[in-house]
Amino acid sequence: MSYLLLRKNIFNIFLKFIFLFFSILVINSCGKVNYFRLEKSEVASEEKKKDGRGGICNPFGGQGEPKIRATLYEGDKSVLKFADFLRINKVIADNIYFSELNLPTTLWEEGFKKKDGSLLLDSKGNPLVEWFGLKMESSIVLADDQEEGYYQFNSYADDGFILELLVDGKYLTALEYDVITPPHYHCQIDSFSQKTRVFRMTKSTKLKMRSYYFQGPRMQLAFQLFMKKIAPLDEYRNNMVDLTMTPEDCLLNSDSEILREENYYLETDVSC
Image (tube, rainbow, N blue to C red; front, side):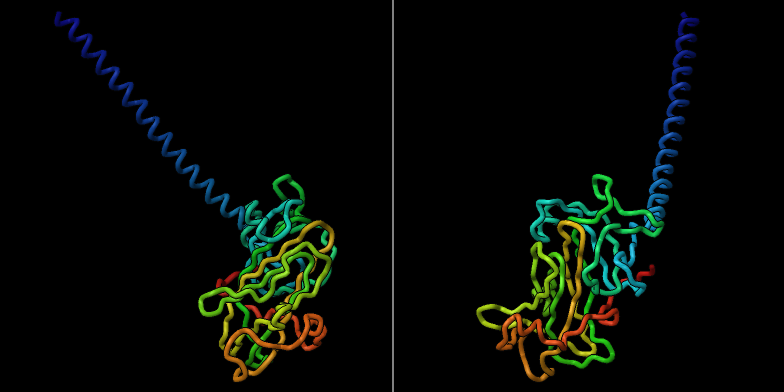
């Protein structure tokens, strides 16, 4: 009887040893998997930085400093306005940078180049040359050679373009021509009141902006942003100004100037 009891105890000890041995293996294995995942995640993060998806600078040309940050959206033929990109919600890249919004009508056949020379691809594996949208953020400032005053903003775009500026905690629409269109100059004047929205700019003003651009069908695109001084600082007290002019008059006014790199300010320090 004691012999059988001894055998049973030895067997139980053996089972506990086996269980402990495999438990140690599992714990070590889990630890290795966790570290592998961490290392793999870190490598992926570094690769994202290297391949340019984390920072594509001036994809439409130019060598200036990054002053405007953009998120790139993929769309499709159902897109009629920029809000459709937000509905589809396919973000291709969230760190694209421009030095300025100054792209005249241009053939766009190649697509967005990453730092390594390869191209950003859409969800079907094709270069992104049509049906894409850009949501852009920066601040607008006066250059050293510009006077303080009230400024109006105009645009030239193919296709849709929207500009919103932050005033007293609220974004006001400065420009909106959010449609598929040939290259088009736009000056935001209310057709009934003949009033336009202007913005007070001093040397210390940093006017936060949100801008939305979308490209419909290939093969050409354009977007340029212009500003024009309307009046000195002491002339108006609000942002709506009676210009007593038609949109055509506004567009023909030759003293509008393209916003330069010096007119943009990006709070985040970025290098390209």
